[in-house]
Image (tube, rainbow, N blue to C red; front, side, top):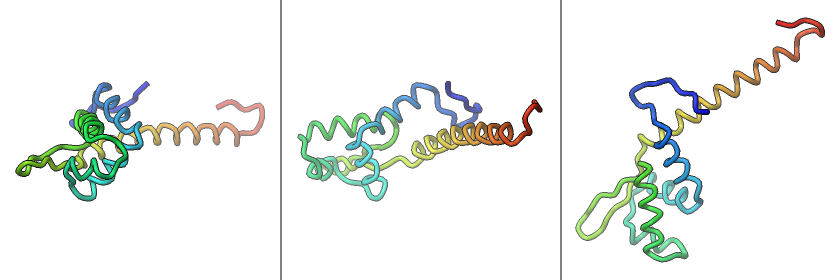
Length: 120
């Protein structure tokens, strides 16, 4: 169950699914880290991995559909850059989950600290 407050940057379930499915793969996480630091061409990215150019292109396409990266054409090359807005939205969602769990832990600590026989 996803518990979120509706707001201007609230993501729907499909967007959340795309982001976390994209980040579920180690190669894609590595691509995001690299292109958040500095944009790289798809060709340069492909040289970094022991896989075909087409496979790297598919990874970039998954990240692009999730909104984690965007491609910009520069001449014949496509430069991949990270999209910090989407990363921040995912971070806010994870912070909401953390807040829920911290609340649960606090309630458990309160229950455990009460003398036996008392029920709040």
